[in-house]
Amino acid sequence: MAQNLYGPRVRMGNWNEDIYLEEELMKDFLEKRAKGQLLIQRNRRLKENLLRPMQLSVSEDGYVHCGDKVMLVNPAHAEVEARLFLGGDLSLCATPDEIKAHLSDELEVPCGLSAAQTRIPVGRNTFTILRADGNATGQVLRYGQDFCLATTGGFEDKMLYLSSDHRTLQKSSKRSLLQEAYLTDEVSYLSCWQAAFLDPQLRLEYEGAPVPANAKILIYHCRTNRGLAVHRHLFLSTYFGKEAEVAVHTHLDSHRVEKPSNHWMLVTGNPRKDSSAMLDLPKPPAEAPPALEQATDPGAQ
Image (cartoon, rainbow, N blue to C red; front, side, top):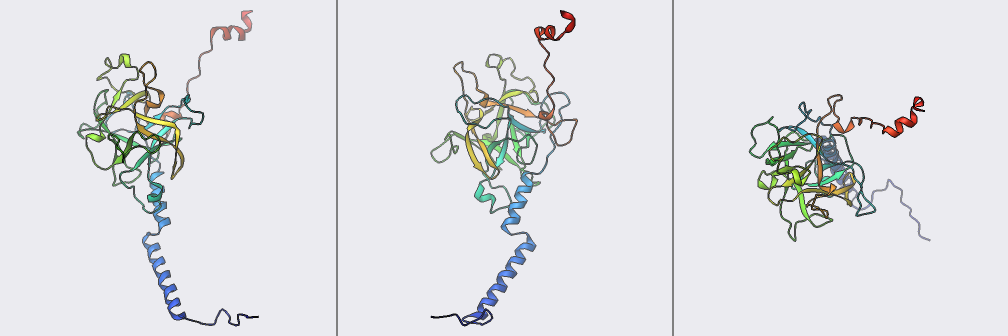
């Protein structure tokens, strides 16, 4: 029976080349680690920037202004068209491609979007409201006015703009195959949006009125005249877990009124706490009905 008579210290074959190769691999590894070029280091930097805590702008007059940092939140509602859906308040988030996120430490353009169950302002869900012409920072945003939504993604030298365009056979949303929403670093008419009043019967009367903060509004794309929407029943497997799809499509009910999937709130900062939103404020207690007050009042009998 054949046996291996050589010990681990016996040098066989191209032992000298193998030793030099191992030394070169170790030198290359140490050099990349010193420069921060390892894949795990790039991945960690990208994740730290996207999840970096941000501070939202505080609205003193109750309205949204150009230059404010806000969160775009789709309020919680029940999805009646599907049994499985993502509940709670969903915020619009920058979502890089999962494969590219493991290979780079920066946001690749175009960058995808999704809606996540988070109420904490971080780099990936904090947007800055900018005028289409880039001027007049601090002025009140009004219904029917063109504006841009930009995010830095937690980076200091990067600015990506929420954009969209007509769908084609090669370019559409992943699950619903509707018009796609994405982030790009180019400012154009594709990145212009308008705020519309929620009630269609009062929409013309509110044209030119200030847009209130932390209230339900509609956000329409200027070029295609379609509304920004969240599909809670269509899930995406992203770099941060299961999230909902975001597309640009106007969902109307039988009365030609936009459905809750098109409703958005421009959430501002909470003046009571740092790095928190107005969503964290407790709601005022509802007043008790008269019948309940009479039943609980011992002197009423």
